[in-house]
Image 1 (cartoon, rainbow, N blue to C red):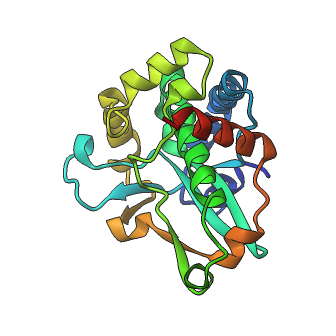
Image 2 (cartoon, rainbow, N blue to C red; image 1 turned 135 degrees about the vertical axis):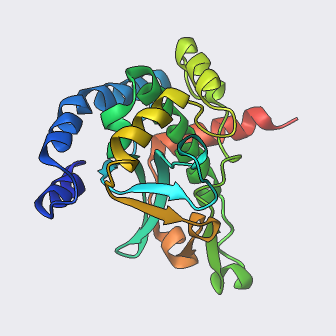
Length: 228
C-alpha cells in the first residue's frame, strides 16, 4: 500500500500544491522513522497507514488552536467481508509536525490500535443478539487506549507520549503552523461531527477477521496482567 496515493490524487486534482506535496514527501522519512521506533519499542508490526490530504476538523472549534484538528486516527473499515484497521496520518501533520510530535502521534495511535484489536477480538459473536446486531466501533473513543507503559520498552517514548497527550494532542506550535500554513491558505479541510466518530461493522465481518497473531498474544498477556 502506497501511503501517499491519496496525496498524489489531490495534487493531480489541484487540491494540494505540488510544492507542499513535495515537502510532505521529503518529510515522510520522519513518519517512517516514527513507525519503526514504535515497532522496535513494542516488538509488534505497525498496521497499514496512509497520508490523508484532507484535514479533518471538529465542528466545535472556532479558533485555530481550539479547532480540534484530528491529526491522526485509527480507522477500522470493512473490506472483502472482514475488518481492516488503518492508521490515518494527515498531510498537515507530516508537513508541519516536528520529529518528536510524529513519534508521539505514531505511538499514541498504536495504543488505540492495540486496544481496538482487543475489543474486536474479544467481542462475543456467538449469541443470537450479537449475530443480528451491528458492532459499533468507536474509533475516536479517546479514553480507550492501552497504557503506553504496558506496550513500549522505550521509556523516553513513553515519557514523550505523556508530555504530548493529555486527552488529545497538546502542541500549540503545530496548531499555529497548520493554521497559517494550511487552514488560512484554504487547503482542503473537512468538518466532522461527533456522529462521524463511530463506524458500524457487521458482526460477520468482525468474526471473519484474522488479526495479527503477535498482537493477539500481547493482548492476552495484558489481560492476564490486569486480572486481580
